[in-house]
Image (cartoon, rainbow, N blue to C red):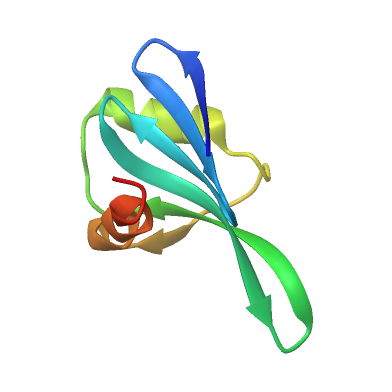
Length: 85
């Protein structure tokens, strides 16, 4: 586990198989390693919940793969960090 402050109120948490973006104290986006029948690949997701404009800017600025995000529920991101707490 590695915690990386990016800028004010924007932090990235690296855990096994994922990099998770926090805006303020909330996980809102993630780069996740997923195994498929074709092998291992990385996918990036953002929360489908609308937070603030600042949080939207954090997500758009982070964008590690430089492309579109898939959408996941906020519960998905809460579940990613449930094991870390």
